[in-house]
Image 1 (tube, helix red, strand yellow):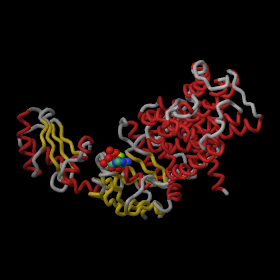
Image 2 (cartoon, rainbow over the protein chains, first blue to last red):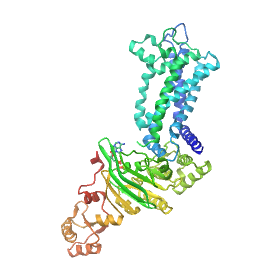
Image 3 (cartoon, rainbow over the protein chains, first blue to last red):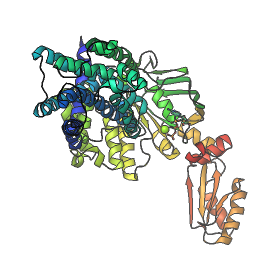
Length: 264
Length: 317
Ligand SMILES: Nc1ncnc2c1ncn2[C@@H]1O[C@H](COP(=O)(O)OP(=O)(O)OP(=O)(O)O)[C@@H](O)[C@H]1O
Ligand SMILES: [Mg+2]
């Protein structure tokens, strides 16, 4: 019993620590606020004027689910940089040498990521509402969509902390950031997949980002959900996204916990 | 009673054999000095004992608990202050200590009180509410050290605790270490300075290429290694005369630094005394500006022990 209580307490302290750090970094907060706002406005209006998404659909309605997912993918880089910085400075080593629950650091880290991501998502949704995006399918489906987004965020966050402890250096982690670009670009975030050349199209169809975006479009009732004969992940986007999340968690939760619990 | 033991520790990183059969036995309630040049394996050894680095071979225990098999028990009894300050740069000194206190399961009020207490005692009260990123190197080191003292440990590992500190901060850290030991803790510290090991430690192990090449009390080591006598003379011609006289007295060829008009010879207390040296120089007609006995530098220790000069950081790469 005390072990579990200590475990939760330790995890909560790590969350507390990360949120304190954020409070001391007004720059990071400003970035976290500005980014989604700038995204919605820039992509919504710049691309929106040029990209046809079919049947006179509103491009910003098409775009918002994509931007939600893109925000999540970019958050991964931020959290990887943070963990890499802590690892490089030896803070992670100090924590690893302390008598705290073995899983406290990874759970605390992913927990605080989830809190930050929730705030970002709320902000982004509010901006979306301002520029004309709507969820059309009622409260249950809307809640399911946000739930799915947060689950995806949580799963991605475990990848981020694992990579962060491997990289061990803020600068290197920051350089790896742009590698997430293809993940969002070779997908249906900005443009429909149908027009892509065969190889890209194949990659985009099996990209977890595409599945998540399609799932959100379906749940929000936004345009861009494929009709008729789509590949399996896009025909069953909610299931595919859940499967991706389960897979990522199954691989990276044990890997990350190992990284904190075992000597290496 | 030995509180930390290591038998035949081995660890390889790629082509570097960082630990190559390292043995240690640290008696409880003492300061133990791990002395060695850059790349000797000091950090790897300490990290292995602190449950952070995995071993390829050998066995280590802390307070009777096997480091590999019972890491949780080991962690409960140790603190590690690593070679580089491990602090949250964006947080203030007070917040750093408070959070570590909470992670040691102190209550809110206790953690806050302990942080204030330590900050005041270690001269950091004025900077307590500034982010650590604004601290000087010495302040960081001190904060890093006291982070390990929030809940006093049975065994404290300090990896080069005074490297890069000015003499005042260094003395403060030395005093802290001595005080900890009077309170019953055991301290294992690594250092590149024989002087530091000599001043603080009851036992010293000299490490090179991942293994212990000499060990004993500072007295035993000094008797084995000998000290050095440095003589400074007035003129360049005196250098020659003094060199001859020193050679005759100690049987060793003095090293001569022509720019500083300084000669240096190894010397062992059994055969030579300081007044004897001064008299000998005067008999030879040299009036020395300065004569001083000092401990050998780490370079000279290595020359004595291995017949090869100690490695500099550049030579390691
Ligand atoms: N993680 C690692 N990966 C690769 N090589 C390593 C690693 N850690 C240590 N080494 C190598 O192992 C050897 C011993 O390193 P260690 O850090 O233990 O030396 P040290 O005695 O602490 O040196 P210093 O005085 O410079 O701190 C060095 O050659 C070092 O380059
Ligand atoms: Mg070292």
